[in-house]
Image: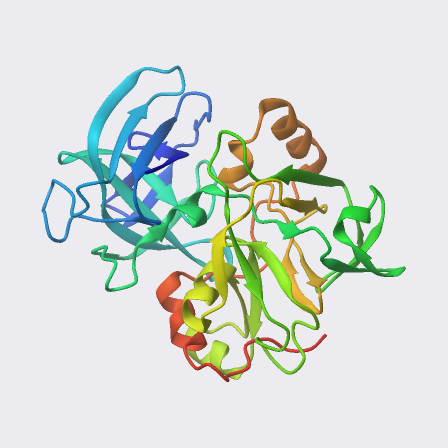
Amino acid sequence: MATYTFYGYSASALVYDAGTNAFVLSPDYDLTTDRILVTITDDDSHFGGDVNADEVGSDTNQTAVVSLPDGTVIASGRIYDENYSVVSGPGGSHIELDRIEIGGVHLGYFTTEPLVAGQSYPHQGTYNVSVSGGTTLTYSQIGTVPCFAEGTRIATDGGETPVERLCIGDRILTLDDGYQPLLWSGRFRAGGSAPCPDRVVIPPGSLGPCLPRRSLTVTSCHRLMLAGAEVALHFGDREVLAAAGHLAECRGFDICPAVPDETFHHILLPSHQIVLANGVWSETLFAASAVVARMAPPVRRHILRLAGTGHHQTARPCLRRWEVALIAGGCGKPLVQAA
């Protein structure tokens, strides 16, 4: 059994307004009081629902302790994802809000993107959660920081540079804003007391002609940019972001827990950007994400101070698992374009 720990929005902080048919995060949202800490024990990688056991939870091995930020336990027992709601985010992106319950009691939400205090998110629909339908969240999607494995080559104004050799101030090539300075680079080693994150190995040429140019290893929640006419046909945007773990499920890429002491790196720019990693356009660290909020307080404060106001929105809309499956199911279909 593995143990996973996440923060979610409390049920009182994120509410549905029937008058406007929208979800709203309280204008007074305070992450020190308005979150819940969810510690889940499970024997698989999916956060399951209650389709087969209403108000109880379909997965008998999926249990949790839920507490407030001050440590007060508010619920424990079999936990489940009651349903997920799709809302519209800034710029037309779609965000998923997953309703967390124990024994029929609504405790809070996990979200696929961070929300902005005081922002209204128009409600598009609410749906059941099931593994067979491909609508469950994976724990790696909720809980890990998007990272590049050591050795990944990042395009800079001085040529391709291994991510571990990047220095503060290095100018990194971005898709939208030319060369941008590196504000911060973080490193972590898998292992220790926390579960090792899942990592995905993307073989050369598996996403398009000669793309990536060499094997690319990233954490499973790390998002790559997909582009093309089919993307535009399905989603109204020619360019979108997809988690590597979701691509692995569709394309059969190797996905497994990182080995102990395997090293990963994340890079922070003045805003969320798309950069070239082993020839593939891929995201940088998004400072407004919930995973940054779970970092050690000194690191989190440092990142937020460096990021300033440039991290309110992701660089492209982010797809859910079933949306990735719509366009990534064909084994030989190109998914990315050359720079």
